[in-house]
Length: 434
Figure 1 (tube, helix red, strand yellow):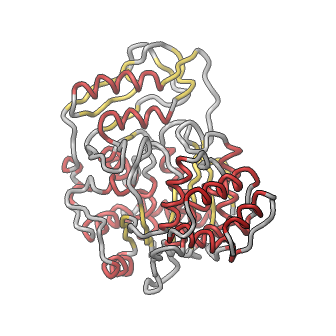
Figure 2 (spheres, helix red, strand yellow):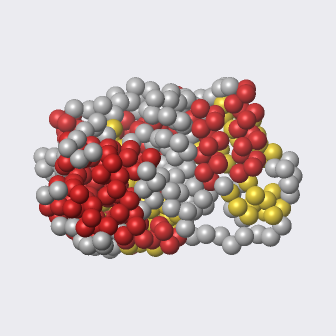
Figure 3 (cartoon, one colour):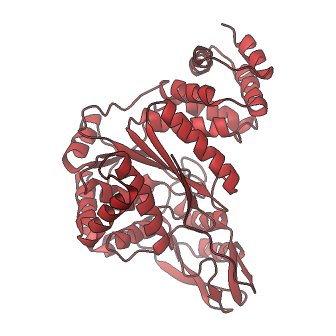
């Protein structure tokens, strides 16, 4: 088998076999296939596409290129959730303890934030002492005993994907559905869960800006998961404005806690319940989505989800008292409101700019090595369709640096588009693909 022949085959719009794709992934990962040949192949894929079987084969080959989490020692049907990334997206902190409190194991690998999107691991580290560095034995023990554990991704999880993505990033081959879908799903399949629920964001703060692109990505990932033998669902949710009101690590933790007390924002609760319902249904804990939702709502009403969050934080070295005494969470020194520059209605929010505002304050990473400030962030007061009077507070900023605060105020003001006509509201959840 020769890489030259496989590049030519894809250039000529012919389908590749599973064995041919495995050869490409293995060869590029071990260095026997050079960058220039892989670049040519990726460009041929971007121009001519891949069918579902090819995309699934690429995904599985990348998943098998490194460590795979063996969850066979965990009792029950294991469930996981992945988000394509957004602003204010703290659903993992809400839904994981709800599901775990119902006896369904949540064995989750999560990442850190980069750029304008936040990471679950960073948010959890707002709990003093919390650690995501568990041994495989601790991880499995925690899931079996309290039905929940969240750890950072191992360095050798889907190494082929890391290497291929780095090449795509510099060869204008990032933006292709098959390559995006296989990159996401390779890590999820390597993570070992039986049921995968995908939260595919759409809108100004999402990777996929249009509903059509989000739908295409959702369908592709569900196909891949199904072919790979995982029960897979994709929920398309709105990211034309931040999810909930809090943006920033400790602020989002606080909002997740309030949501588990039944006092959270409606959009965050609705998205969390929808995702969690499909996780429960996939795990055969409920016979219908309606029954699953009812069970989940009861975990908030009876306090079992909040108690489960406390157990989870304690089991991973964090201070569980911070759940009941939220003053123990990191707090910023400077607090200032952002005044509206006009009167009218909030007609649009440039959600990625809201995320960048949090980054400017120090709540996000510009590079993988950046140190983040867990205490800073934004508490939003005005969302799409809300009436605004000039000078009224759009949001409150939390900061530890005067200059960063001044820059963030200007950035956030520009993220709000205020007009004279009230816009139509977007649904929290658009559709579900199964």
